Image 1 (cartoon, rainbow, N blue to C red):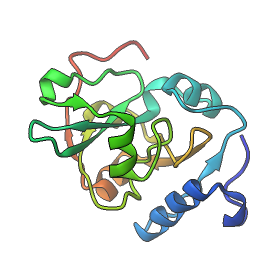
Image 2 (cartoon, one colour; image 1 turned 135 degrees about the vertical axis):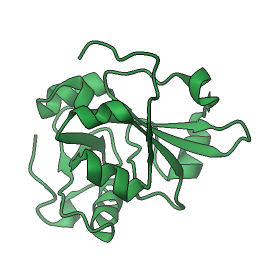
Image 3 (cartoon, rainbow, N blue to C red; image 1 turned 60 degrees about the vertical axis):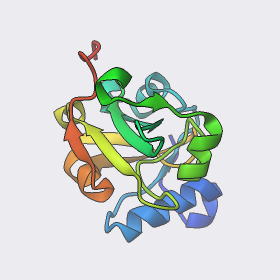
Length: 164
């Protein structure tokens, strides 16, 4: 794991956009660029050295009206699409709505605010780690800060949590 931005010029462009969004949201957090991929929750947890449940999976769906819905899921949970009445969005829709590719979608810093649901299971952790624009960039944030900056609705999103 390499340190924070150490000068925003060292961050990839997508990660710099997330760093700017964090600052604009009033969060004094540094985007961290990892030497290993964090494309999956398991990879991210191993790279950061935390339980898989402390990883925020930013998943984009289409709600029952076709509108985008961002669901922030604990890394050890699976989103119950039937429970939320959503369908998984394709890669093009995800990029169009968020400005980021799957595997690096952050919970904030999108072209327009997205309706967001936050998995209540993320509240088990003092600090959670979220994607920061690329599969190699993440940032730490408290559960409360995550809910605040995303204006997310906290609710159960899975039938039952996996083992952590």
